[in-house]
Length: 257
Image 1 (tube, rainbow, N blue to C red):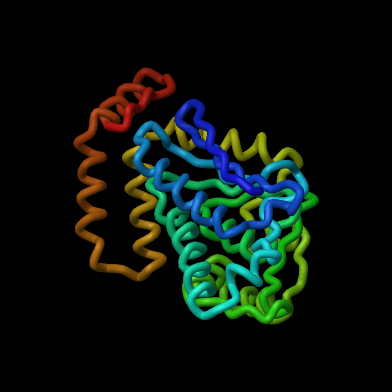
Image 2 (cartoon, one colour):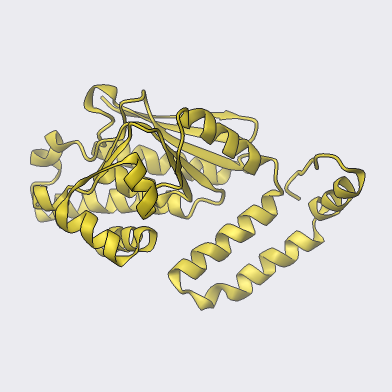
């Protein structure tokens, strides 16, 4: 039975999707647990960055657990419930208060690709492979999922990925924007990036993420809220600490206040 594990260390949370025998395929219970894990991270103000990964090195997430489809996606109501759980988990990642880094090793197909594209930044191992196989399975893909693909890949690359259901190797994935870069030790690299983020001013990082989300959504109604978040940065103790540390030529010690 698959599970979601969460560990915390030095302002960084690591969320691990674990069903190694099924290449970390996502069951309905795992989608629900993943959303709950990110809800808990949202409430934990000590967390400044998150790494999302699959257990082992053979897969990030191979997609949905197809063995469940006969019981969990066999009616209009059950399909709606399943899709709602997937959307909630992906939205919790996208809207997470802090940056989320996808550490991708091995297979990243279907729902796994959707999860990766919900993260702020993504890095892959050289052996990683990416695919959107919906057209080979006869699955419909909703507006939110398609919007994420188009925003990250652009319309022409998204069209190729979705219409052909082709497999992209890591270098191709980096070229079309599925991942930021490819690294031999992807987990060590993601840990380093997470630490870099965690050492920066939390209020500044969070205000920037809010602004980027609103820009992606085209939501001008949130400009006042973002301006307020920026104003909080300038009034914070961290802003004073940043100036002192710069003058003293040392690493600042930010507290998020």
